[in-house]
Image (cartoon, rainbow, N blue to C red):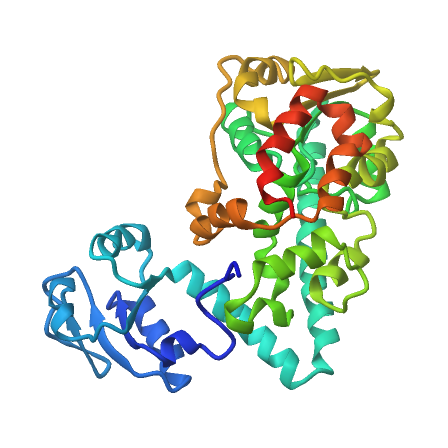
Length: 399
């Protein structure tokens, strides 16, 4: 089993081991209170600040890391509670300590609260869905209105738009473009919240639109982790720490849209928000722009193509070749000296190790595997050689 997290619904790892918290700070106080409310005893606090060593921290003594061996047994877990978690992680790795990052703790505890509430009060589940959805809608509409007002006020003639499938380099591209130029409209990964008035406003101006594509299986696995907070009400997310394989099977290989859960509720409410790559151009792009990209030739050798329809300029690029296309992207937006900035990298997330493990150990159903590479999306944006390389990469995962 590929375990989703060390933290399960019963907080077993803390109850079965001696617990130390690394970080005698406000964050450490918060973590300590949460664990103690769940009847978990904190054996020791740890800190790198020598001025704190030996002092009392809300009833628990503070130790240096070097003192820990004489305080804890061999059966222990260290919960990091600091914004400097990566630096602390390196210290703990050097002594082969068992630990949990604060970013993992923070996400899992928030999700666990929702999960336990929905289990205890099933009638509240629908209310929770509606409340979460209202927040999504408010955020998206506010983004549209803000951009519309800014554009109208500044009387801008050209609108640069980045609305593309998730995990195709969107955040890196957006950060790079903003640093180089300034104004760009990004509505996340969906056109659903663009009102008719805003739609008319957009189409009256010159438009530069850029969209990334990517190997389907790579996108699915990356998207699986991006949506990590959307599985909070699934038992499969909590039993024994969660089962990555089972959750991936539900939403990617079986595409079970009948399951009553937040993930499917979100997709149902936004009928065009199909996050997986093959759906984007038919259900979103074509619906909004009335253009069928599959009828347009794509240069699979160069890894990008540019299309012009009156005042609408479209650039579609392969993520796999994105780093080689800096000049082409800069030229498309008429930005001299354009350079790419890498952001939202999985290596910076708490699940980075799990992400790498999943890529190696996830089992892929053969029908799913063949479907990914035989559909019109892959055949349009990649050539036979590209597809053969992708299939070779993932064939070891195929059952």
